[in-house]
Image (cartoon, rainbow, N blue to C red; front, side, top):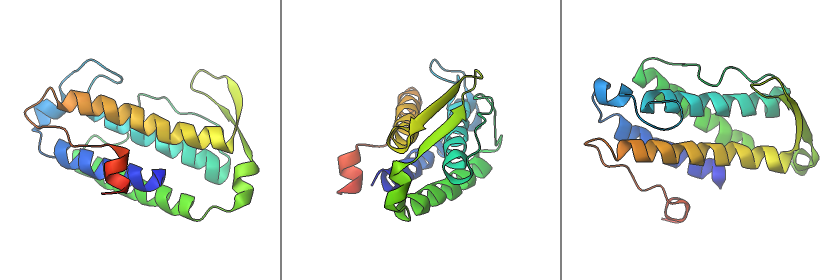
Length: 156
């Protein structure tokens, strides 16, 4: 359910961001990462980081301010591919996955171990948290932010 919500919420958010001119899209704003552009890149970076951990055991966290895609349309395409990967991954999980733990190193070099329940909850909570920040940033532009309430997306 959360993977499906993530995909649909991102589709809605990116559709609105696509209506912004480039200056408005990149304009410095208060909040994590400092702009809509940087924040959308950060969300994708976080998703890729957690999915690599789940799928390959990759422990390393990259710099969290890395810009993966400078071009909006390339970022939007990459976002759609990542959302499809996330949705497919969670649809295909077996019960054994939920008994696993995941060891990783955060961006400050600290080592942690989280259960699958905590790590997956963090993946989806991180997305929602930062989409909320993009939503606020959009409200400061001429483009109205989209509705992103979970219960209206998964049960329209």
